[in-house]
Length: 339
Image (cartoon, rainbow, N blue to C red; front, side, top):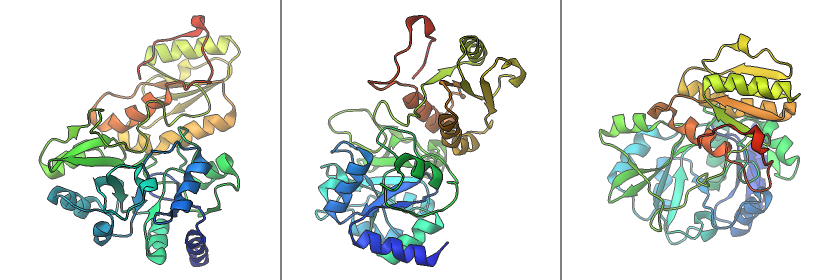
């Protein structure tokens, strides 16, 4: 870690500029969370629609009361156990918290990250840093400085290098309903781990007027540039060979299918880890690799549909949904997909 770079980044933040920051989850596009113009700059760079809240990164648990008006005891327990780390807590905001940060809501999303670079930056800066993922809105999150530079070039501002992200998936987001934890977004910290610690079931958020909006909850999100399809193992092989016969270049993420069966021209199979945490850590990096390789299609073998795979399935399901304006598949070129 370069101390001079940290000092330079602090100056950029104080001047209302953005800084790309490594975290243990993904790289973030950071700005001074108390500067409305700087926060609006994040939205402009990302092309992020207004009204989408941001996560405020704080140095330590002692900073909670500067941002949250009330903190339920269970939130304190969670923060003491899992901070610093990939857990975001959504709490009633103090009046001073900017509406640009909260999306106009009465809650604020807070996290203490564990990556040494952002930890040093927060300590030197002395305030909160609002930082969504450093990518264009709805697209694939970056897990390396290279990913960010290829997305924005110099438009995002100074990039702090911090190596590959150790978790590779966004943080888990919890809210609270009558003092009980509610899952608002699955993430790098599994729900099972949280439930085991608390000794209670975590509620699932039901979309509605009373549900807080949280980052990364759009139906279509986390998308690579390349169209992506989710398939069972046998369909994965058949689909890849069919696309190969059409002269397509195909990237394949498989777990249990046999690699020797992907024998067509233009096929690039990548074996993915069998464990959920390792799979999540590798996922975005492999998808970025295939985007750079210029394949025509990415095929992904369905992961297990168990609790520990919840975050991976959430990201892949959203990535497989095509946004308006993306490639529309030919009716004869369809396969069953599960969101």
